[in-house]
Image (cartoon, rainbow, N blue to C red):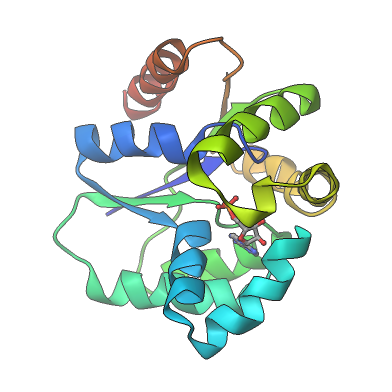
Length: 193
Ligand code: AMP
């Protein structure tokens, strides 16, 4: 099994480009954000706990997302691999993912990092808010908190995976989705050579 990580700040296009990679490489796309939003919509206990944190732009506890991911690793096997979107987001989650995979005799294959400047995050998310109606996309204060959280808690993963030679970055700042998708697909080809 391959284990790819879609990495980058909020609004970088992780979910959008994950779909193209999923279809081309027969991967299971696991977005922790989407899984959490499904729990919220279903009104589960986990969803109720997650909602309050997500609405403020804070991360949910590591173990909450790790359980959701592990459950899928245990039940999905009709694919070539997994495409993790929005996970891991902390050094703790990265270490736990390594353990989870080591127990299966597996390891992270590569990190596909989509880079966009902070100013672009605001513009992209404002555009998305109009289409998807996510509560955490609606307020500039919450968006800024998510950007700050990304820099403080998620960015250290760049060094973590660079040291392992698994970090691959692409500028995802082109004006059109098609151009950015071509860049992401190009990077993936390079990784798999
Ligand atoms: P996303 O759809 O990836 O932007 O995620 C939406 C929100 O879900 C984030 O702002 C966090 O509050 C929460 N979330 C998603 N993935 C994680 C994760 N790996 N760790 C902690 N919180 C997460």
